[in-house]
Length: 305
Image (tube, rainbow, N blue to C red; front, side, top):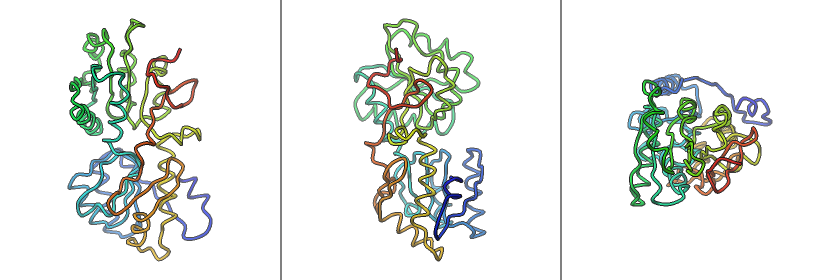
């Protein structure tokens, strides 16, 4: 994001101020309130997992500035929806891709959560797709920090049959649990799926388990040798720069974003008054980590030979 800002030419130019909210919804709300009081911010880019509940929506309505989310959010509704734009696929669209990646409708599935809000949101989206398809609901297992020591033992009964295992929420906290999942019997395929929140650094730290892991991301950044999250963050600043009003009129900037398309690095975003999540679900791909780089996964989620 900073590199894009430094390379800008012409006017108006976007100025960037980065605030670390440490993944805290409370700190995000405080920053929105501070900006609303100070009236010193024309738009916001939110790069942390967030839930568009009534509290956050109320804060966005109060600040009355475009707010771009680079991580998955549901299609916004209510009085604040006109200010909210999602630059990632919706949780429902991501869950659909993950569930469809299972080889059969009867494949047993497990959702592993770490107790975080992000994990809870992803688990609910996955369960909704299983329910809509009439599939058996997945078994939910916790790998929260206080239960990681016993995770391998609790998972052992599931390793005897082929299954799909979804680790919901940020991947970094799952490095040890993921390593115990692959079945010892090579004839049994245990398919491991991580969150959209995964990046190449996370996958690279999985060691020998990395080739058998898949996670959802966007196609174009992989071709360009970039990560989904970095590309989307850069697109957020570029989109704001392309639609900024020289006089600082927030309503004009918002209307420009809402009424058009934008060809970014990660994808081409298309918004409208009735659609504020701008990613085509067909752009979602399953990604893998092979030979030290992120690639588009092959059809099988089995470890690469």
